[in-house]
Length: 392
Image 1 (cartoon, rainbow, N blue to C red):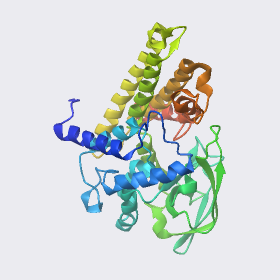
Image 2 (spheres, rainbow, N blue to C red; image 1 turned 180 degrees about the horizontal axis):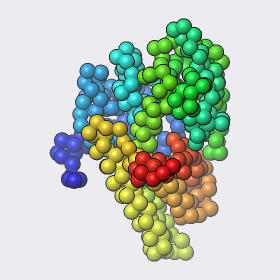
Image 3 (cartoon, rainbow, N blue to C red; image 1 turned 120 degrees about the vertical axis):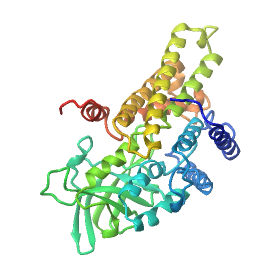
Image 4 (cartoon, rainbow, N blue to C red; image 1 turned 30 degrees about the vertical axis):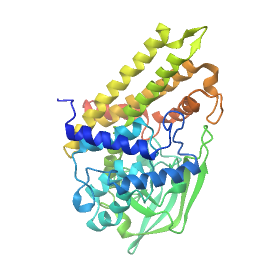
């Protein structure tokens, strides 16, 4: 494999960098960070996302006939990397990363025409309704019901851990349409307008004191049949496609590299007992180990990108990156807290917080990384069964 970028790809990378430098506040990604739980930042992030949409960059590989640029997927990879490198404030990444590809594969022409333009422009914000209070790792045991009534479905139930539901215009969700079928075979995939009567969103405050998660309740919510994505009772198999794209996370290693860079610079500039932290061989070894892990994750991301560049759905390599990357971020956060010492516990907003509190927040939010989008245990099962052919 040739790991060198073409001149055209390098030119695009420089164009993206120039745009980010011009549009983001000075110090963004170094002394100021994207906090999706901050409502004031959310408005800025939505406007910034729409600026990217105006340049047609949010999904550059999508077909021209639907508004995309139909560029090689590697340019999408470069775009994602550059945004992650500076912690660019993007909202609705779930729609471009994993909902859009699912709509292209399973949606009708009418559904594509209805939803893809809003995703490409960055205007429409989507949330994901999968998990339920008693259906997390065993997602197929979900109990939210959708009962067909003429040309509509009536949905009742509850979803939990629904990220950004308080800001979302639409939700893509799973509901049980055949309670008599085996649990994996009686689920359907729906696209719902969040303004539909009967939908209630309640906040869930996490331990970082952020409002990122929500509970979503459905009380006799009526959805037209046009809201059904793909075949009735085949939603589980469509959802696994969505999850494969979700777990790809090709921009993750670039984000991790940014944290390693911040910690390395801090170690060079900070003295303890009159000696720079970077001169401590143990500190150097730990940072080098994490930097090596980032490169391993980057190689996995390249492998996933090569699958997507061929127009295929990522296979076991996606959960491989998911489990390795999630645990890697936790190790980065733990090492960062060790390096910063007691000052590292100060929250963002404190003038004494090193690195503007970025590591403290990372330490709190990475706890959920090995749970969200499928636990590490589930990912290892998928790798074993689908990748290695081992028995269940």
